[in-house]
Amino acid sequence: MTPRTLHTPTAFAAADLGATSGRVLVGRVGHDRLDLTETHRFDNTPVQLPDGLHWNALGLYQGVLDGFREAAGRWDLASVGIDSWAVDYGLLDADGALLGNPFHYRDPRGAAAVQAVRRRLPARELYRTTGLQHLPFNTIFQLAAEKHLDRARTLLLLPDLITHWLTGTVGAEVTNASTTGLYDARTGTWSASILAALNLDPALLPALRRPGDHAGTVLPHVAAATGLRPDTPVVAVASHDTASAVAAVPAATEDFAYISCGTWSLAGLELDAPVLTEASRAANFTNELGIDGTVRYLRNVMGLWLLSESRRTWRARGEGHHLPELLERAAAARPFAALVDPGAPEFLAPGDLPARLAEHCARIGQHLPEDQGAVVRCILESLAMAHRHTLFKAAQLTGRTIRAVHLVGGGSRNALLCQLTADATGLPVIAGPAEATAIGNILVQARAHGLVEDLGAMRRLIARTQHLRRYEPAGDIREWHAAATRVGLA
Image (cartoon, rainbow, N blue to C red; front, top):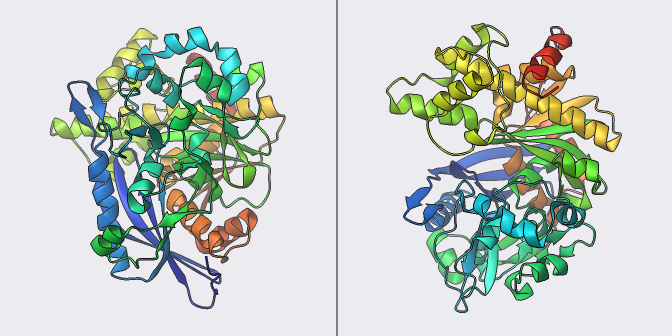
């Protein structure tokens, strides 16, 4: 790609696909300039079919095309890039046709296949190879339940599938590949031993790409449908949305922790090498790749899904309130009235979350008031405690000292959650940017065009140009320790 100059801001489009919605944003990058404009937002609603819960992959692709068309009508785009959540995939047959809509990670089929995988690959052996946190929906377990493998020739994770439809090329971007349970964290390649143990054809998995690699140019019919220039490059960004978000953490030193907070809270540290110890496996920490060979050492914490699913239930009953009002009520509610472990398995599936919270509290000897403000307080305090527990455990397992917590993503707009996290950890929380994933996507593209030098330069640009808010810890941290002890998160 031709190096560009910083004198005139250069525009890049990021398609950022989240678990509940997708959007396309345009970032203009120049000297001390990083401006974002959202051009299109669309729902990402799963579809329940007789065989399980699926993503509407074609609807997502159409949303991306619509967003690119809006963006191309306003800017001359230097390139585009795709990021999304991890683990889910589409299978292509020998003709390149999609074999059914991709399954949703909340479908229970993966959990049902865990034991079948464990019989061939014991948990300790699998962790020593992949360094991956055990989650029942990891790609490796989904594949064990897959019914189309006999006809499949290529597996593409969701952002790679969208990239394929845009360009006609196939590849596997490495930050997302590292979440599958099929990637060897020691060698940086697909794991031949795991594939052999599961009788998976190595040809099913495409060659790996790195963030910043050229993935291809848009196909003629894509250019015609969107108004993009026929030679518009598609850049392989850090396609796992958390990898893009962590790349956009505006940290100035190494002694920081991060929380990428949205549907999930991904909480952890940035390391130079994976931690593959038995203690790390027992604590269920994952080692996923970031940009420039960094390792995202983290644990998935059930995030604001608990709040969004509760609000969806209330709206369906005609009892919904706007989020600012709910947060005001939560701030006024009694502290530590009821607490849960957000990672409890009964909170994973869609459904009546407030009822499940109440049932869970009753089972562990607590009473959850029915007032919506108290429910929201329970959710946010529980999330803050889970953040605390996860970050303290990460520091213990790695020997690292944490002096500040960077909370990025949509959760950075939730002032109450940010303050509670500062209170729970006893550490300052720097909140923002809210659009960290899109910013990381855009700046990897900008670096591929020669506009930004390295990860440090990316982070300094973000710190200079984006709105950040600092929350200092308040209250008595001993109260948090006592509260955490109640639910086993001390």
